[in-house]
Length: 452
Image 1: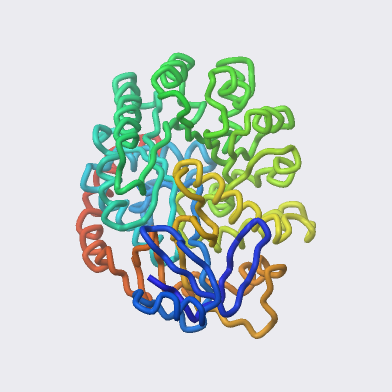
Image 2: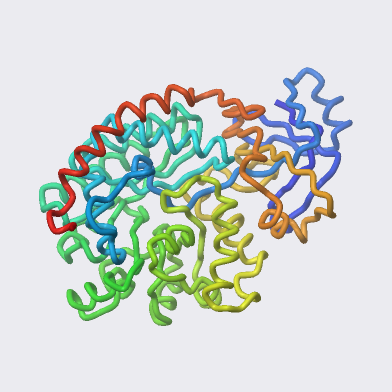
């Protein structure tokens, strides 16, 4: 496929916006980039995709999400509203994940995958929980991802909150799926990590069991210090803070993702930097849960690798960019905080580096020869100058997810001119609507009795 009549946004090490270029895609990779006239002549017999003057750029990447939360939209929590994040877990998320069956797991994943294709998010790093449907749950999600054509990194969250039998089942599900990934899943578009919930629901024994069970070189995916309760629990259990506890148990490392890091201190930042552990920032979720604003600029200054996720919010990642840009200004009452170029460094470059670790055959998130052909067309025609230097601010103040017209992953068109080609949105919606009443009814049966 030859994509032409486009403005190229490379997101290269030195970002460029190139007019008059064309891109040749072969076998899921970017095979050649060159001047349009020469490329059209040289590849005259190749199928063409006319970009109609739109921006052609790498697809967006989400560094931390929860497909299983799709059915929470519009769900009413019985009784009084949760007063803090621990109550949100007990009254919303933990009863909801207990209510999921394998069919619900599949349908909720499909809902999120449709959303991702529509919004130009081509790679997603998911963190799954369904304590009454653990065995094979990652296969169910992987099948949905395969059908969608998207790229994803999956794991199952191990926790002690549902008892030792389910904790062991969670460990086994991770190990089984990681072995399957080693053999190849969805043509190489699905990879795995070893999922853990959070320090506050994991005993020392379970942490040790997970470390022992994880194949050599496997990264973990765990929530860290999203709320002060995680730190209080860790201090009570071990006499150390969360990051210190995870370091002691061998959980940190260059392929491990620690989500949130809102309540980390300077020594924890040092440990995260020393071990090259990733931290993901989810500003919309942090604001919604009232947990505060993570010290992102301090973490970056300390040398921590920070990426951007959405924690189950919509897969419109530019909305996450905008929230990050604004939250830190409001939180610190300083308009100089979280500048646009730092948001781009985190949301574009760091997300690409993180995702590329799980798909090492070629780079992601860059428009360059040899890279994965995960691309989007964006119908953005600004009335002011657009350059490589001011692109972050155009994204923050001008881009909107509705401007994504075409989504391509591994050279396959998943959406063209806003029409989905691999998933039937009407069918996905109908299936979800049929299942949700049962999920909500089961959810109500798991809500704690003290929720009045």
